[in-house]
Image 1 (cartoon, one colour):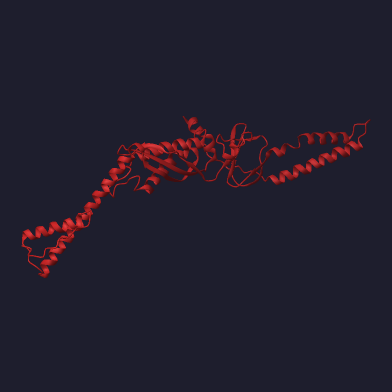
Image 2 (image 1 turned 180 degrees about the horizontal axis):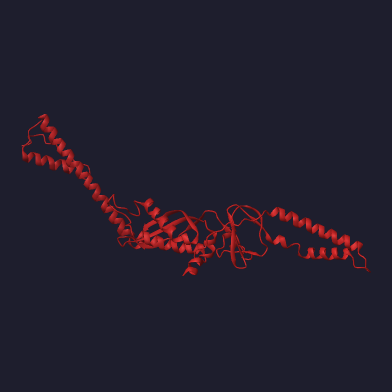
Length: 321
């Protein structure tokens, strides 16, 4: 069990590599010196006697054959790039800071299984560095049932980056594919906990509480990709709609709900206006109305105030009785 936990929990180690400029300069100087020594010894060699010129020539030729080996260990790291190195299969560290470095010539860079768009266009060129830049994962639209069982279509976009190169390469096989699968499952798990829409202002919904839903998506997804060395910077819903098979019915329901709510407000306002009118007439002693006339007046005012069309008044020139 302990060995399994160690295999599944690689931690990043920053590799302290010397500057490559000194090694490059020294190697070039030694190469030129070896070339000059070979020429000088060849010009002064004695064919009959074995002397120091023969030894110098042999050493110079050997260096000319193997002196280029230090060039293998020269590495260039660009901003927001990382190079993971192993030595005979063992992880020795990661170069994360930009610059020109010299590493062990026997160390091997680990090639990520994930290929960037640039390297995908050049299949013959292996891409050995890991990008530490913020990247975007656009999740495809998915059909998911909300809390009420209604099928809806949801799409999200995730902004992420690699923060632990050792975990990204050694804990998972393909960290981008791992992120995509975890994003799909997290979206389904979170969306199922909320209704698409709610008439209750205190109840959270996908349409009315998008910020809270996105925060939960981000925190849940972050927990699931920690083992892959990834950081979720932001998660946003880019598409939210009812599925086509119920979109028309849901539109009618929304229209009916809106009409009912509008009618309720109109009736509440009309009743208040009628009550105010009766109180004003009573306080000002404009006229005395019996209960029957009050009921008729209330009926007429409600018809005028609650009707969909403009009322056509009828003027009575005689007595109201």
